[in-house]
Length: 480
Picture (cartoon, rainbow, N blue to C red):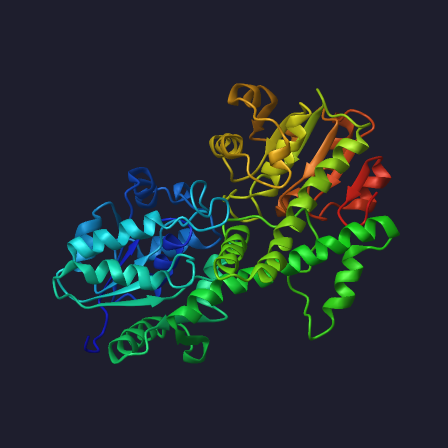
């Protein structure tokens, strides 16, 4: 493939990665046409809605970026084959969930959507294409994609690149506009190097060249899994220490601050909480564990598996703290959940700690009242339904499957935090939304049943102020 300026890009998948990534790319590269395509008609309709508050994804700053580029050089549609045909570069940004069936169940990545994309590209393409893996994939997936694409017999040249995303939900636009690095992996051939350079030239429209890292394609794929594994490992490490802090009277925030001053360790990802969630960390570590077992490295697999087990234990420990403090039963008691998203500034609730804490409390027939600024009731019930269908997890498997009728009788979703907390036996803070720090806690206390318990899973509550009012506040890593 001869070097040329890229003028037309297609992204298959309009989800949490594809939508924001392509929006920023279109904003920064007004000379490039960017088509984002998806078979989900409602999702595309939401991306095209004139009301920017109805975008399917909530990210601070995303609406402004979409508003600037949409209709100029950023387009959302369901015309997948047309976009594939016109594009010189095709990003694959579809979901790669953990398998729930067959070989690798519960650990391996399910690549059926990746394979479907590859087969569709192969059937449509009539001229040379650069295919970019943007989804998080197991090592050597590019080899499988290339095998499918090269089987067409049409004489079309396909160059496969890996350019994984390193986005943190809630700061995705900042991560895209001022990235620590963009990573591109390609084949060590003339054609592969030309394809890498073509993508470097696109990113260079707004990213300093020194922040664009180029590697072999396999190194790029493994770098994404490894980065998430290292970050998750830090979260699980500080959460393991939080349990010891509660027993000894130490303060986990003080411990984190002290060790974070060591330049060899650093301060990031040392915030104790009820555990990590989201679409990446758990899925990528399980994928890494599966790969290690596949290549007969059981000790390495066991090492990384402990990060997941520690994360599961932290959620279980938090739920048990609630039950134990409420006189060893929550049956028939109203527990207010502040937050359902896995972190603030996103409407993503995938693998949120709230889902698993709710499940343990529902096993004891607690009455849960949820408030989250961005997550809808539809998504909350869908999360609980999915967990009931699969019941996968160290502590989830120990519980009994509940019907959705039972769950809907026990779980109420509110549009007001004060309504959720009114007449509650206890409050559980499960997402670190900024607004949770600003409530009139005296009013909340007056409206609650006594004693009034608060279980702070994110260590954001004004504990001293609330203790003075009369709350009994329990914080992760500091105890009561």
